[in-house]
Length: 402
Image 1 (cartoon, one colour):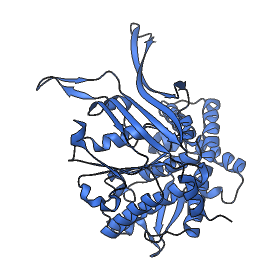
Image 2: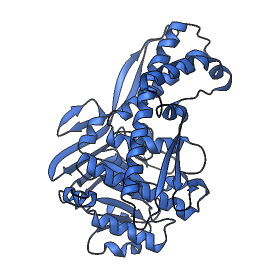
Image 3: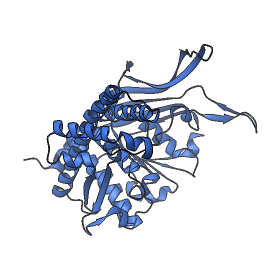
Image 4: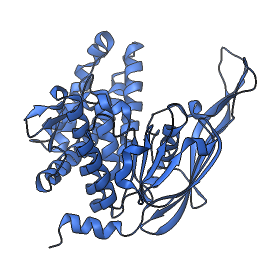
């Protein structure tokens, strides 16, 4: 039987990644075109010169709101025409020539403005402008962003994730859901629909709505979506735990992943249909909580727990360096699982990834990227840290982009 690492090497012999990236009015870039190999790309430069902006642009080649989760309007380039006058571009766009297992494709995404009439009995008719993101693949406009996942996949680490294991559960839950998207292209749609229904339910209750049938319908839909979300999360966590146990890393610590959520735990012992019934019933019982306490138990409150196996210690109690190593360990396991599952390699977007890693772990991470034959876009203020990639990576400086 072919071993996982052998199969990974076989798959990554076919190149997947971005060959050409073109930005227009994106963040600080009026126009930028980069032509790069399918190999590590190290982008160095001073803080504030646009290194992370390039990674963010690449993240918009995948489904979702990018690695910063920014509002679409905030991405447009802002420039000064005088000391006191700032102008904003009307739109922005990202285009790329990509390879998926040596097969070429073109992807484009941009901000689009739509004018719609807003009719309100209390106001005069007015024209309102709505902004949304449009996507084209090989020249054809698509309606579902999830289609992007069939052509390119990206995994990222940002400095904000250095505090992932501290504070509240929401960032960890978002991190987990992003990992799930790679294996289940419908997961993003389900989570977005759940959030929409939750807001609608919340607003109705806050407004004093007593229409039991209306509320019950929303609660039933929320329960069905919530159980599907919980099941997808459980599957991803089980997949990663199994892979980490069977293929432990030789440098980075082994992790154990857990889900701390009522619905996820119920699925361990009960069929989905019964969990749905419980969820819907529980939402009905919590209507009063929403009115007075703004809280309701469910998949919107699930926490993603990480433990360092060598010490049997929760990640939040580990040192800063250990927490960063645990995060890298999860990302490496996710990367290998994705290659095996999807049959093509993801692009890694690593923003200041070497922060909090000692020299040995830094060089080990870079060597693993090299050995896996991945395209990794890596930013740093100090390019000298990447000697391991000498003669293998392309080195760029932001001063070249001016």
